[in-house]
Amino acid sequence: MVEFSLIQTADALAEAAELWERESEIAFDLECENNLHHYGTYITLIQVSTRARNWVVDILALRMIDPLIHVLENPRVLKVLHDVSFDLRILHHQFQCRPKNMFDTQLAAMLLGKEKVGLGALLEEYFHVEKDRTFQRVDWTRRPMTPAMLQYAAGDTAHLLSLKDVFTKELVGKGRLDWMEEERKHLEEVEFRYEEQQYLDLPGAKRCSPEERARLHVLFDERQRLAMKVDRPVFFVFSNKLLLEWMKDPPRDWRNIRGVHPIVRQEGKILQQKVAQAGQEEYLGEQKKRLSSEEFAWTEELVDVRKSISQGLSMPGHLVINNDQIWQMVETKSLDCFRPWQKEIVWKYDLVKKIVGRKA
Image 1: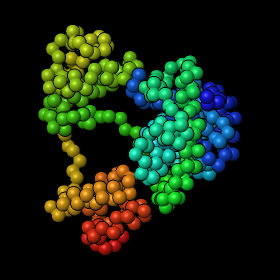
Image 2: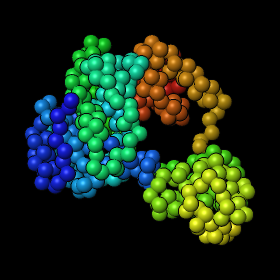
Image 3: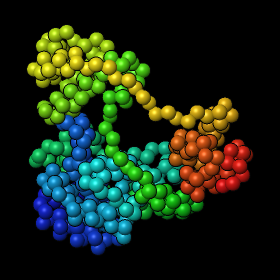
Image 4: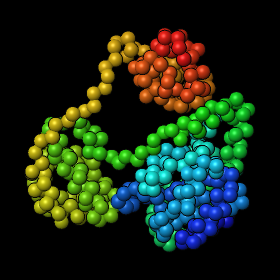
């Protein structure tokens, strides 16, 4: 059992934040609603742990969490978390918060060549703690939360500081701690933006006719409106499969449609009118620079180089060189977009020297 304090008032949050500000390091994690049970994506809980205590902060009860944001943005306090990508995107989207001085235990696991880098697998491997998978799809907006839900949430951060300690020693042993430090600095430079799916992201949207694309746009926006109205995920209103079917052949009688939320039939007349008035919509996509035949061949060869390095280091290929870096290297003939540790491991390849003109 993990002992924790549940924070649901501004006074309790302010008191806890005073303690966190005095720490040299804390661990934190988020629980979110992510269009799974309700409409939209937003944080419901933030869990915080020090070496001695654990807290679960009820974001739905508080709404304003300035004391906690101040701690997360304090560069003096090290923040340990697992898998920064989504967490940092939603923190910035919802609270305009950009945490400083972070240690991502998933990133450390990848740098160490771990095959299983999920938090559950790592906690089981190092601390013999087994996470209850039944809570992975639970409705975190539910109030009151059950004791089991709170235990699960608190457990996400209770061992993170210890996991950081273990990984730091292993990184030193492999001579990769400097790599981790460079990646940690890079995390603060990345703009983590949360972007919701747009209608042009759907399969085939960019290749359909102007008439179909206009109908798709209308149907996509109307589905968003209806989902917000009934507070349900968009796929509860109607599926992407139906959306793409109706883009080509809209229903003639919206009142008798099956396999949709009742709100669709209730507002069928409005939908029918808007789809009929959709008009046409041309697609003007981004024009990417065309590579020469030689440059394109280089990109394919660099994929092979990445695979070779990845296998040799037992690390994921995207961490060694991601696709954007391959493209930028070929386009700019430089390694400016690489971190120093990446430059070091790719520079031994003659192809890289050929592309960048023998200058690192």
